[in-house]
Amino acid sequence: MSETASLPATAPWRNHGRTIAAWTAVTVVLVGGILASFGVLAALPWLFWVGMAVVVVGVVAGKVLQMAGYGQGGKYTLARAARARAEGRSH
Image (cartoon, rainbow, N blue to C red; front, side, top):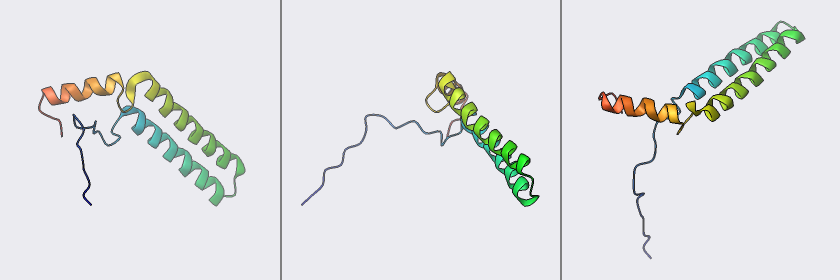
């Protein structure tokens, strides 16, 4: 038996998550996780909960930025990629 494989009409969008929304979310969540970790290590429950609140803020900020067009496939991300291609900086 043979399998038939077909290719898509165009190459899929490839930015490996390098978007403003992704970087913002990851950075803020990482800072929150570090704060929460220090809260656990130092036995400071208030610091743990502050860290967890920062994690939630990071997730929400990432989603809001994505909905505003700064995530993968968003209008600002696509425009930035088009400028990079025009300048010969695309990958």
